[in-house]
Every structure is written in structure tokens, then in C-alpha cells.
Image (tube, rainbow, N blue to C red; front, side):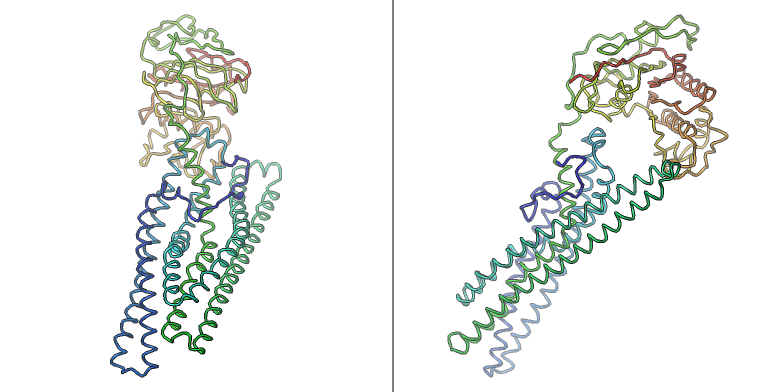
Length: 597
């Protein structure tokens, strides 16, 4: 697979007319090939029959046969013309249905493959490029199925049969066809190499254009602050002009290749026509055979000419399938999530954090929902700790790049706030990402006492980036809910101090544009609270939720988090703020210890 930094449209080696993976990943293509093969076979018989009936009628008319004798031949030829038109309609219908079904299967397979590979794999890929492939690229399969593949089947079936018919009718003409036909594939290969190069370049530029546009929109606020928005717009315009130039280059090569193939086929048919004419004048060939061969010869060259022409129309679809097959192959080679981790021995835990670079200092004194308590140390045998853990991580070692972070043990029970703290870059967010399934790891993860690849279903999460979308604040808080509870939305916003300055009906732009950093953070926390209160999620997971808040607002957020824990939820909190210790039951401190291989 190409590296993440490689251009999305970089040329790849392709030596087969049809990638066999198409049959494996898009099962609808199997029926398409079967129906197309039968249709083409019948069309070939119709072509030969029509040529023979028409030739017999013409020769009979020249010989002065009665009209009554010629009418059945003419009627039969007309009937075959109608039948051929019907077969063409059936072929187009089959191609359209096959393209639609194959596109759906490949798109569904692509989404399933990305889900299986996981966020850790996706983080090293260009998501915008994959979106272009799954959208615009798969739409190009219409030409691939509708034009290229039927012509490829016709070339494999029709051309050999018609060449054999010519060879039987007139060996000399048959040998001429056999000797001249290889010229067309030779030029097709040469032209195809040039076409593939310019098509890949055009497709890659389209990916870069989409990526550049997405990046510019995402960072538009920063660009405007630093006065670089005009420069970004100019950059998009340059890529757009390049895409236009490369599109015109593709068209020039396509027209040139079509002319070359038609010229070669015309010359080949002309050679056959000249030899037949000379032999007819010399009396070495009868009119019936000569005219029959002349009618069949163009049809013998036609499939090969058309497959070269249609290759250009389908080149974008071929490029898209290459991209998709790479992802599907990667997912097939990747072991399932349940077996992708090495299970470490399960030690008896007391709730403390252990392992290299991890320490667990005592938590401060606080008043719990069970009344005043003394200093709460990690590993104390409180009533809450005797309950079944909601989430338990045993010797979790998160993969970072080519290495592994030190192991971490973590236990989260109902009614507890577990604080992950430590210097920046030590791996706090990485541990949370592993629990969410966003990072690969080694170790054992238990959710409500059962092994699980991740704890995403039981976590209500708010990350360092708010991750807001365009729409109303209400829609962002109740993200994913078709019928939001307006009262609960307002309550969640109020609990984190977002109201009245942030109204539920307030419209937001792309990525939550229209809110300050602190307001966006509070909306994200409110969304996590809404999920916690409306789903089966039992653990609130917050990653630096107050980094953009002032002390007073931060205190209100901490009070809301503590209240959720006192109400029976588990809480995992990642924070640099020392004020977070005031609400923590357990503190898991990660110290810099390097990344171990």
C-alpha cells in the first residue's frame, strides 16, 4: 500500500484488464459477467446470421432471383436487426444495474474495512482523499461497467468467433485478419500507458484539490487572523487551474488514441477489401463469400477498437477501484479487533496505576456523597471500589508510531472520578484513545467485567477538540438523536454554565464557527452529558475539558462532573489543571519514561 504521504493518484502497476478482486469484493459483478457473456454470445450469432442473410439477399438480387425468394431473407435480416437492438438494450440495462449494485457493495465494503482497520489506521490516511474515492470515484464505475467491461467481454468472445468464421469462409482473408489484428493491441498498450499517466495525474490532482479545500475551510479562522486567507484562496485556484489543464490533456490523449485505433482498423479492413476485390476480378473468389467476409471483417475489429476507446472513459473508475481494493486488502490482511492485541496476564488490581513511568500519589481530602472522608488513596477499600468496575484496563500499552508507551493500569467504578495527569506528551490522551478504540494497544480491557476491544459503547466522550458541526447548538448537543429532548439539552448546557450566552437555537457554521473556544468546549461537554443521560453509556470521559475556561467557569464544570459521579456515573478525566484534584477519587499520574519498543 502506498504510504500516507504518497500522492493519492500516484501511478500503480496494473497488468490485468480486469482485477480479479472485483469478483471477490463486488459479488454483483459475477452475475453481471454471466449475463453479459450470454448476451454477447447471442449478439455474435446475430452478427454472423445477419451478414449471411443480407449477403444471400444481395447476391440473389444480382443473380436475378424472384422477389418472393428474397423476401424471407430480407425479413430475416430485418428481424435480426431488431433482435440486435434489443440485445444492446439488455446489455445497457445489465450494465447500469451491475454498476449500481457493485458500487453499493464496494462502498459498503470500504466503510466496513475502514471501521475494521480502526481510527489508528485512518489517522495515517487522508480522509478527504478516501471520501473522494468513495463518492466521485465510485460514480465513475458507471462508465467502467457500462462501456469498458461489456466491450472487454465482447473482445474475448465475439472477436475469436468472427475471426474463425472468416477463416472458414475464406482462409486468405482469415490469415490477413490474424496478422493485422495484433497491431491494434500493440498501439493500445502504448497509448494506454500514456493515458494512464495523465489520468492518474488528473485523479491525484482532484484528490489534492479536495484536500486543500477541506484544510482551508477547517483553518479559515486562523488564516484570516494571520492574513493568509487570500494566499490560501490563490493556492486553491492554482490547483484548480492545474486540474483543468490535466483534464484537457486527458481529452487530447483520448481523442488521439481513438483516431489511431480507428485508423489502424480502417487500414486493416481496407487491406482485406482490396485483396477480395482483386481476387473477385481474377475469378478466384465467388461474390457470396467475398461480400460475406467484407460484412464480417469490420465487426471482427470493432470489439478491439472499442475496448481501447472505452478504456479512456473508464480510466477514472479503474483508478477508483485500485484505491478501494488497497483499503479492502489491508482490512483483509488485518486480524479482527478481538485478536489484534496481546493479552497480558491479569494481575489482581487494587485500582492503583503501575508500570514504568506511572505513579499514583494520594488524592486530596474531599467530601463524598457518603459523607466526609479522610484522604482517599488509590487502592483504598471504599464501598464504591468493591462494586463491579465499569471499565478496567490491565497493563495497557498504547502504540505510538513504531514503539509502545509504558503500561498503565486503570479501574473506573460507578461513583468515582479517576484523574489522569502528567506532563504533555506522556500519553494521557493516548490511553483515552485506546479505550475509545482510536489507538491500537496491548493489554487487557474489560467493560463491565467482560473482555472488549474498546469501551466506546459505555463512554460519553468529549475530546480536546470540540468537534462541532454546522447546525444549531441543540443539534450539536443531541448529535445523533432524531428527536432531541429540548428540556434536557437546555439542562445539559446549564449544568456546564453555557447558558444563557449560548442558546440552544443558535446557528453554528462549519466546525462550530460562531462560538468562542470556551463556549465550544462547554457545548462539547454538554453533548457528552446528554449522551450519558440518554443512552446506556455509564462513564463520562473528558479530555482537557477546561483548557479554554476561566477559573469561575471551570469550577462550575468541575461541580457538574462531580455531581454526575455522585449520581452514579464513572468519570475518566484527563487534565493538566491542579484544580481537577479537588473532585478526583483516584489520581493516576503518568511520568515521562520514553517510549519503549
